[in-house]
Length: 551
View 1 (cartoon, rainbow, N blue to C red):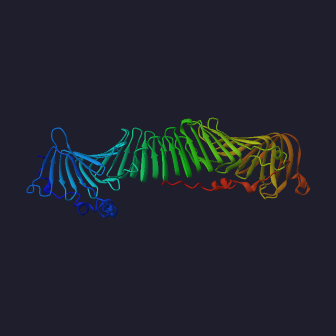
View 2: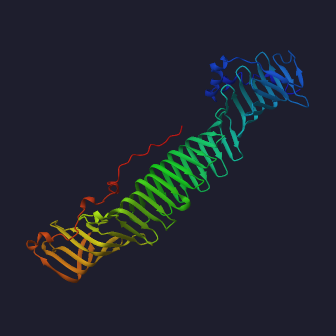
View 3: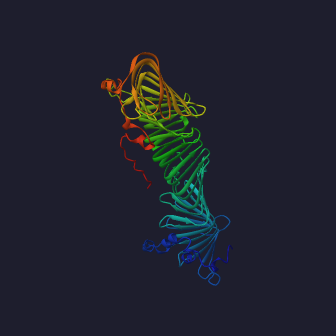
């Protein structure tokens, strides 16, 4: 005879609420007070098979003892479930079973509960299992020490650690968990740890669908792979297709990138990520910080795309260089990147700033090109908005402008302006404008500051000459083959005319008003970029994307 003393104890289901209300109050209260349970028609538990039957009112006053024989276990049925065990105590008046030894409860072909010990109430259809508990459904096995199962709601619950194994690939540990059989979903709570061959997920709460392998989590969550770490406080991950969507303080750390955004989508199978709203992408290798409100990263082809208030800040050098465009594309490996800023391209570095249609920067050559794409009608206009630079108080324009950075120490080395080079600077007393124009401009920087400029071919100049007391001596207007300029204290200090063709110094009252401005003069003081916020002033208006939340 098995377990002959078991009828002495009070059944777990009978004292469930009193003993465990603090531990699983919400779940168990629904067990005991659900009006729908008792409204249903009650059916009797049936004993289908037993090797031995014992009825002893003195020894077992309320129970019949059923014991297996050598060939078969005890078989019990009730309203769609079959139970087998080595021994059972059947309380017929209570419609209650207490089962011992290799217990199995099967519900059709969708659920199989195994344990060392089980209690089953035929009136309420509540189950309590204990000892080496295994809950099996077609896609997974749950292992725990004790489990409660409500057949009416088709919900199972454990509160003393559990382990779920799905398809030998996904393993999930947690302190508490609930299984929703109709949805084929688990809700794991407290110290949740999902492990796969490719990554681990650590979370406070994780909803896991056993058929699809999708995981929905809330609360602080970390997803760790061999080359990345993901953090968010709300999101999902598809373990079968290896992709996920993360919102609320979401962040991805790759070996070379750190991505932050209001929402992030990640497809590990193709090494792709996209981020939306308030994004920050830190490139720890190339030492750049990119920001905007939408970005895509294709790691396999070393490509990144940013738009909506797009900005890339390079902080390799002492002074941070900012490059802006309504769209920015970055391609290439470490130290071989090419940055392209399209639409409203702008650059800002200390006292140097500029703007154009688009900026192309090649990290290998160290050259940043400022380019304008002009229509024929615009070229014929007297006031074409050509690429422009402001260096302290000097305005520099031309058909295209190249800024060359020294690759070794990452400071500006030189400046080249091709076709229609033009420098404008206000006279110190603001009586007029000092101007120098020519076909081409070459400039040299020392310690990041423009110190020397050569204007080549067809050089023309208008210059206000002043003495040491800043009194106007006269206005110089001349033409020459070349003009060399020296700059100090943020102003044009001296300039030398080489192979002068003609020109003279005019007293102010003799200088013709029509000669004060050289051909192509266009002063754009109102466009000067002084701060980072100025970089975005001419951008097209846009609305932030509404972040899609998870159901």
